[in-house]
Structure formats: C-alpha cells, structure tokens
View (cartoon, rainbow, N blue to C red):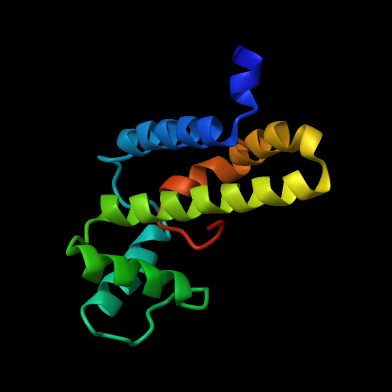
Length: 133
C-alpha cells in the first residue's frame, strides 16, 4: 500500500508542497540573502511603476512575474516573493515529472524526487533568485 501511494503523482505533489511550505516557514525570518536584495527591489520597483533596471544579471521576466503577483494580491513582502518563487520551482518539478513520464515512466517518480531534493537546486526554491526558477 505504501509503495503504491508513492507512485501516485497527486500524492507526491501534495507531499512535496507540504514539505516546501515547511521549509519556506523556516525561511520566514531569514534576512535578505546576497542577490535577493537586487531581485526583490527590482520586482518591487516594477510593481510601483518604476521600470528602470537595477543591477540585475537576467532578463527581467522573473521580476515582472513577481511584480504582477505583488499587484494582483496586494502583498509585496519578501516572504511573499519567496512563496511565489517556491510555486514557480514546484511547477518546474511538475514539468520535469511529465518529461520523465514520457521518457521512462518506470523511474519517473524517483528521478523527480532526485531532481527536487538535489542539494544544489533545492535551496533556490526558497530565495528570490533568478538562477533556478
């Protein structure tokens, strides 16, 4: 029965989302980390109608998406930006799973879990960085 549940994509998605929310909660009082300052401020500026570019190293599509979420929900906190980044990362995991299903369905769950919790990637789901999402 347990083995069967681990093969259910909806169960894995729900479990992943709960784990990610827990980790995000651990980050709620973490101060701005390195490049988060520029990325968060760029999104904040966009949401306030200021479209000049700060010192960012990426095309500002990510920042525009975060700014759109700020405007839509009326929340512009660092924690909310981190939540949006986590949701983007989670959606990437869903896409990764779908690709694995097409290539090798028998190993798609384990490969997706390896992708999700790979130490060099996992941390970026919870910070306002453009590197992974």
